[in-house]
Image (cartoon, rainbow, N blue to C red):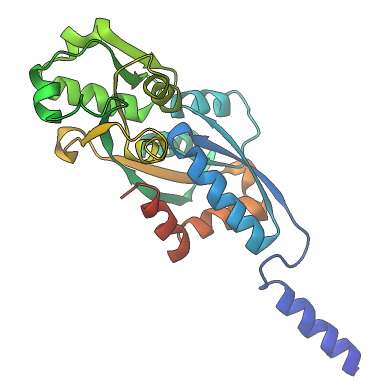
Length: 250
């Protein structure tokens, strides 16, 4: 009897211990801007829980299309708030799990240390030979960049000079490689790029575009996946929030 009671207590406790029980695996669809951050967070979550998180990154629009065509993702970390809600409305995601995990900011950045001296003046009427942005039809950061260029009255004039990446990671690489001298890019990716290429930058006022609210949601197919559900809960923890802020997000 004593052995049976002890075993019952141990089983009950096991359900609450990080990493206890059988490890699960989840596949996350992650907006390109958040890919490195998601991998860092997934690694830490894995150490704590024993679960494995695989990250697949692309533009939010491309991920949405993949999910609609049956891609086996357990959760989505979008670069906007609209796409996860659209998936909920379409019956593909669990609306009770919607969570705004980060707010992105745009930065005008160049690898040339002397190019961005007055960012506002440069955007409004400066000479811009080539400007990297993400595709506005696929990537929320690209849509925000288009809003910024419309705000300063130069969208139509600069369209022929845009180096448009399929996602924001590709647009950032255009600037890192020198293919484009300037880019309207996420602060998070600029902070990472500046570790090796300081360059020059200017943070775009948040009022120049709609807020870049990034939302996570659990897919219906991931409803019983302990790794996916646990990771989304971990995203809301104080430790994860502090890491997300340190990586350049509000």
